[in-house]
Length: 405
Image (cartoon, rainbow, N blue to C red):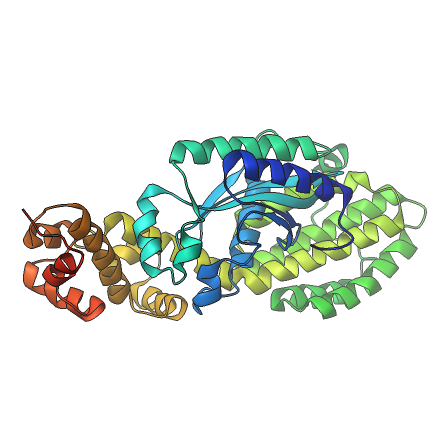
C-alpha cells in the first residue's frame, strides 16, 4: 500500500473493503494518476491476463486512466472492458474540487464474455476467483460506486449538464469576448516554446519553462490575485489548443478544462496555485504522451467488442474498419501490433472457442456448429479447428466423453 495517502483516499479504503464484501467483486482505490493505492480482493492490482500476455502487459494503467478521466468528464460511474474482456467500473473521488482518485471495481465477467476469456486464461486456479455478474448487477454496482464516491467527495460528482461555471469563469468568458489578443506584457516567446514542449509531451522541459513564465506573471500581478488567475486561465486555454493539435480528442480536453475552471477558485495563495498549475502541465503532457496508446486502446477495445458480437456473421477487415472508423490498412497494422496476431487469426480463435462451447454443451451436428460460429462450411471449420486445437472437432467432443445423439 502507498504511503502519504490523502485522508479522502484513506476513508475510501474502508468503503472499498465493504464494497468488495457486499458485491463479491474486487474493489480498489486508485489515486489521480490511476495508480493502485489499495486493493480488496484476490488480484492485488496485478491481473494474471496481463502477467502472462505480452500484448497487454503494462497496459492496465492506461485503460484505467482513460476510464477515470471519462468518469470525471461524464460525472458518473464509467463501465468498460479491458482487452481481455474483463469488466471494470470506476467512479471519481473529488477533494476540494480536485480529482483525488477513484473507486475501481473489478475484474468481473459478463456471461457473454466468459467463454472467450476462459479459453485464453493461462492460470485456471485464478479463473475460478473471478466474479461472474449479470448486466443488472453491474448497473447496481455502478450506482453504489457513484453514491460512495459522492459520499467521500467534498462536493458531488456532477455530469457536464449539471456543472455550473464559477464566477471567475464567467468573467473569463466575458473577457475573451472583448479581448481576442493576449496583452503585450505577456511573455509570448516563452509561451510559444511551452506549447511546443506540450505538443512533444516533454514534461520536464515544460515545467522548467513554466516556472520562468509564472515568475514573470507573478511579478506583474503581485498585488492583483484575480488578474493572476485570469492569466493562468489564459495559459490553460492555450495549452488546451496545443494538446488538441497534438491529437488529443477535443471532448477530453474540454472536460478537463471545465474541471479546472472550477478548481481555480479554491486557491487563494501564489504557492497553492503554483503547485496546482504544475500538476496541470503534467496532465496535459501525459495526455499527449499517452494519446496514441489510448487512441489505439479505444480502437482495439471496440474492435474486439465488434468481433465478439458478430463472430457468427461473415465479417471482413473492411467491415471491422467501418465499425471502428479507421482505414483497413492502418487497422490491420495496429491490430497486429497490439494483439500479436492478425485480424483473421483472432476472428478464427474467437470462433473456435465459441465452437468448443457448443461441442461440449449441445448435441448440434458439426455442420450446424460450423455455420453457427461463422464458418462457411464444415470442411473449413474442421481444418481451422484441427490447426488451433490439434485434433478434429469430433475427436475433441469424443475426448470429453460426449457423443452427439
